[in-house]
Length: 231
Length: 98
Image (tube, rainbow over all chains, first blue to last red; front, side, top):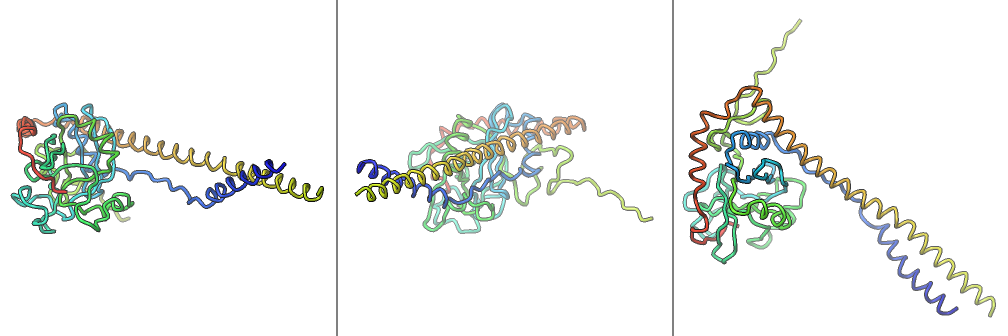
């Protein structure tokens, strides 16, 4: 009898906190990815239709939305994820930025350059295998890594807004799981990266780009508005 | 003594009842969590499907509009692909920009 009561008491002690913990659990939040911009759709459609990546996988980096979209060589979307990009707005890199120490790059030069880049694996000075997006300016895509204290990169990547995702010196940072499960196996050797411009027209950023009709793109001719008639 | 035994028994029965009750409460919570994960996966799948669909539709509109898959762009594309011959492995190591 004693052992029975002891067992029951032990069961109650074990289960009551578990029940209380379940009751106190925060409400689950369902998060769905924001819809891709028309510019992402336009560049993907153009790349696939024109065979610009020439059978290679490709990725589109939307700096404004702070997201990366990865497509296989067949043009099918493999995955997408939030990203951290250069803290300074702008579409070009200052010459020789890639040759400089990070500490010597002033804030206004910390841009992620826009354009079409052949990405490929190389090595960093630390001997790490690195996927260079633009080797010339030392821009790579890599798992989240803080450069200086207080940057709160994990927090910025996890937040719902893209506004706080501008923190890097120009590299593109993504979640490690996304890098290991989507980027690394998709870009086994090389691939093409299309980094969408912020101020430059798409046609200027991507040589040969032609916008598919029916999409609203900044810097391209829009359909004239319908005429309004007054009776 | 009998009274004490009865009290202990009643307490034990109450404790088991409470535990089972909480266990029963916990089951729908797990179900809810599974449902939530499934919903997330469904949303993601739908979203991926939606972007693929939008891209396919854009390609179809370009085809229907008779956009040349770019005679004008062919030259640029050739230039792009010429640059693609670059072999990164042979380039010296450097520090990423963070």
